[in-house]
Every structure is written in C-alpha cells, then in structure tokens.
Amino acid sequence: MFILLLICLGCSAQSAPPDTVQKIERQVRFYYTIPPEVKVAVGPLRSSDFPNYNALTITFDNGKKKDYEFLLSKDGNTLVRLTRMDLNKDPYVEIMNKIDVSGRPIRGNKNAKVTVVNYDDFECPFCSRMHQTLFPELLKEYGDRVQFIYKDYPLTEIHPWATRAAVNATCLADQNGEAYWDFADYIHGNQGEVNKEKQKDAQFSALDKITMIEAQKHNLDLAKLQSCIKAQDEKSVRASMREGDELGVSATPTLFINGEKIDGAVPPDQLRDVLDRALKQAGVAAPAHSAPVPAPSTTK
Image (cartoon, rainbow, N blue to C red; front, side):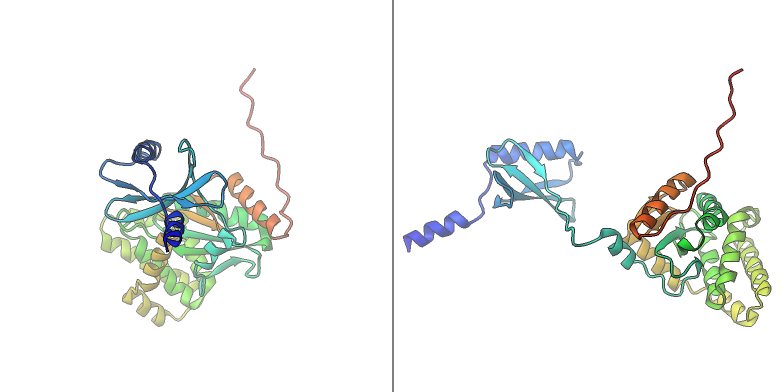
C-alpha cells in the first residue's frame, strides 16, 4: 500500500515553485499587456509530449475565464506558448462550413470551386468601393472560375438605413436573384441618392422606391414584394449578423475567399493574390493578368 501511495503521488500534477509562478505571471502580464484587473492563475505542471518540458495551463480571468496552454522547461528557465495544430482538419473548410449560403443569390459560376462570401453593408462607403472592385472588374476577369455570394452585416449603430436596404434586397432575392444583384449594384453606386434625404422616413421611402423600380424591370410580383417590404422581417438579416459575429466579423466589408478572411476594402491586386492561391489549391488555373500600367515619370 505504501508503494502504491508513492506511485500515485508521483503521477499526480505538481505545482511549480512559488518563485517560478511569480516569474511566469510577470512575464505573461508584460508580454501580453494584461490589464491589472485581469487575474492570472498558473495551473499545476503536467507531463507533456515534448522532452524536457512540462505542460501547464494559465487562466486569464476578467469575469470570464479563458485557458491557454504553455510549456515550461524542466529547469524553470523557459516558458513557451503552446499552439497545437491538427493537420487532419482544414481550418478554411471549417470556416466555410459555418457560413449558411442556402437561398442566397449567386454571381458567377454556381459550381465554381472557389467561393467569395462578402459580409456587406449597403450604406457603408468602403463596401461600395469593394463592390466596384468585385463587379464588374474581378467578375469579368475570373469568369466562371469563381462564385460570389453576399451576406448581410449592417452596422446599425452608424448606418440607419442599412438594415432596411438589406431587408428590401432579401425581398427581391426571394423572387429573383438578378433583381437582387441589380439592386446591390445600384445602391452601391448611388448611396448619395438615399443619403441626400435627411429624415429616416424619407430615406426608407427612397429605398422602397428603388426596390420597386428594380422589381418592375424583372417583372416581379409587385403585390407580394410590397407586402414583404411593409413587413420588414429582419429575421434572416439578424441571423446573418450573428453568423458574422461568430466568424469574427466586426467591420465591413469582410470577405472570406474559400475560408481565408480579408478585412476591409483592400486593393484589387491583394484580392487577386488570394483568389489565385485559392484556385491553385483547388486545382484550377488562374486567369492571365494584365501587367499594371506604370505611373508616368516625374523626372525631366
């Protein structure tokens, strides 16, 4: 029994010496700029898969606890942040699996191996800039190699008519995908037409008028559309916003190209780099790109 007791004691987790725990906390607070109100707790040492290192968990507590895994050298002189990556899982594929694109209008080839999902805000000027880059420039350039899908992420605190535009666009999409895209093209190219109205009700009326004009172009069921506009059911828009939150979206535009995240209205060449890489990984040849036009010389 005495021998069994010794064995059990030897297998149990052990705490690091108090002076080492203090050193760890000081280093972690400094390196990660931890605010003073956040508590830092150093867990017991455990055996690890790495020779000459023990594993330990450090918990940050600001009312909500978060655990992070570290390695501590057995001589107590080196702390290593442990990030284990499972190469059997593709993080980009997992991201795309979290995005619900069912029922969303598609531009491009619906069977393309590369998908661009854009979390968009119809009132956002940077979204307008991104939209002009995607359409028609990149759509024309990449042809049937890529499909483009928009999700809603209206920044309601600073864009008062963005949600209304998203709901109206969804009403159009319920009947005709091309009507949705024509609406998106028009709004992103003519935000000033709505912004010139100073009252919210007038802005809503302007949006509704634009929506009805697009519907007439595509011979939609106007009575059904008017009923949808009047109802202003935000359910799908709110679901898209929650989905964006879970994916780390916090501003617009935010794109996911086969899962790779791009924040902001980045230059076209940066988008091409990501698109070409995604195509290559999918076994699809990237299109030929025209050489950029050199800037005119300023020397005499």
